[in-house]
Image 1 (cartoon, rainbow over the protein chains, first blue to last red):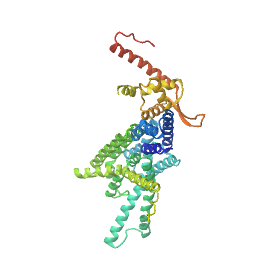
Image 2: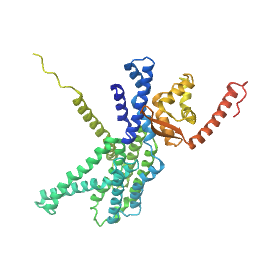
Image 3: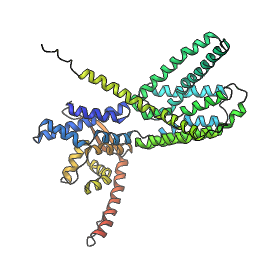
Image 4: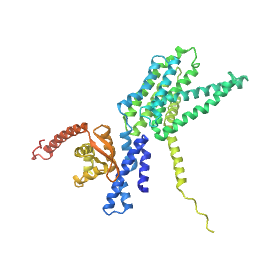
Length: 332
Length: 114
């Protein structure tokens, strides 16, 4: 493939953010079009270099073409919408029915969600609906990581103040070992998702700030096994509303095409839901604290964009290193 | 500039009408539009594929990879039964629209019947 055409198609593929199989078909189709056009222009007497430049120019800017194709291919059908909202609805109903303290049921739910996600992702080409499922599948390692961190901090604090660990030493070291292990699992999945599309990674991460705030709230109220269960259920209605809103956000996200609209949707939803979370807490938070929570949550949610740009720079650096010829030996 | 705007609003109907008679691939469609309109409509080539893929997603057309006799792989598009129904509706609407426009803009002209 001539360099100008391959460069154009590479730039376009890079902006598609679609399933690899879909991207492959689209690029093949456009490559065929450019080849036909170049051959046609050459038959009219145009030289090859000019023909390639014209073919690429008349196709349009790669960003604009990729945007048009992304908007068509990234939107889900109603089946995708329905399936994508199921885990959010399930979580919302668990809070609405005050079932979150039924740990056996919660475990069953998480296992079922993880199983469905694994079935869909193992072929390497996950469906559009499966990203919200992946979000809850990652919740288990992410939240257990957070719990392990809280427990380790508590252990170190007790050791420093009393000279004794509040639990078994082996358990303490197992927890320390668990931190990098769960991080490794999450990092692996997140890198794979970001390579496909950082925005889908953000959609996946949508429940995280709210699940984290819930775990921190529970910890503050005395932990999962606290006997203040009734008091802790005071925030259940607000939390059911939050997960219900996530279902609606996911549905709208999958039905609207433009990326900017999707980014705006995630940002606005997160900001509103942070306010709902803050209002549901049994303490009065001031405006600055709520604003800081909004900034932290939105930054976390959009952080996959920064990760993608870092990965891109690394890939570009590797490519340049391969392409640049070795410098010739200095002449004497 | 003006014809580009008119084309933009009718791209999908135009594509369905072109595919009604025979399956075509992208570049062939561009050439056909250029030829049939004597160069009046110049398709912005990058906008063609999103339009084709949108029609395919709506199941109005169907895309198929095929090999040409000289072994070039091309994606041909053919109209579906749903697409034919959609085209018939759009053409009826188009007829009514042009008749209404003509009766205002060209009052002496007889309205066309189908």
